[in-house]
Image 1 (cartoon, rainbow, N blue to C red):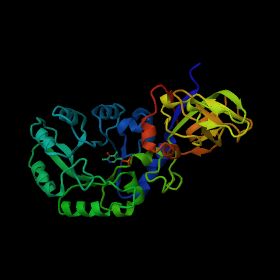
Image 2 (cartoon, helix red, strand yellow):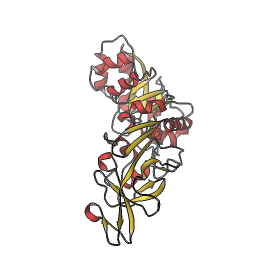
Image 3 (spheres, rainbow, N blue to C red):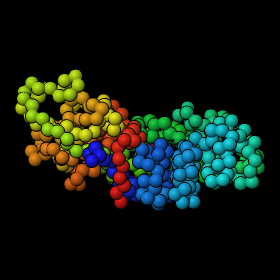
Image 4 (cartoon, rainbow, N blue to C red):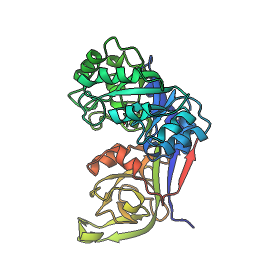
Length: 364
Ligand SMILES: *Cc1c(COP(=O)(O)O)cnc(C)c1O
């Protein structure tokens, strides 16, 4: 018997969330962002749920090849562009669109021998200070690109630093609009937070780039929940109870004895630990579903096991199913955002950190 732990990818939820993102900006085309192996879901597994996308955006050339190998003939965008000269050969061969965010990438294009015109997305740094040309250098970069015979079409792009927070997108939008005024070409603005929270303001965006929302996580948790945005969990992590202990008042649980029973109680030991990708930083009280009923973790998370409180679920015992995040057995759900917040992080990190040792299944 394999260890009783399983991650399930829900392709129906991926399709639902993608449609939800599309409704936020009905006039824009949608890149499904599938970087980081589709946020830990696996590109091949997620693909069935994301076919309705207008294109796939990612970082890695290997991932771009995998999307093409799945038979996808539509747009594929490299969000960071190429890293070295020879990457451009693959762009030509696989018809990949690529971001151009620095002079070095323009140099590479100028030296690229090809008769396949490249479609590039010229990125402006509108305040994130990660990638892109500063506003005062943007137009000269455009002019330089426009003069290259290798370049067929130039689209315009920026990325918001605060779409999920109080600052919002207005300032960066205004800077982008002023800088790109009169420049021809399609525009792409907006990650999940910008798309859901500022969809109406993104009117000028021909393409949006939702990632996390497609994977069922609220981009602005805890201000809003996945339920608020009508997003469904796309990944369930569940494991079984492999042991039951009966504690007396004063008995402790796990390494460091950080939880001490205030009264007699039954606890279950779940076959999931930090080596499966469950965050070790989750303290006592982190929510779990036991046979679909909400309960909590007790004590420290160890490498292969977590203790949970069986008191709210009288019938639970050896073999009961514990949902760590995602869909429970009876329609109950537990948002990955809640677990992430308990550990002081984001749903993004948990999805991406699902360990390779966890068996994965796809449910339609
Ligand atoms: C990752 C990424 C996105 C998607 O961001 P989410 O917050 O997951 O929606 C969009 N655009 C760029 C440039 C990115 O790198």
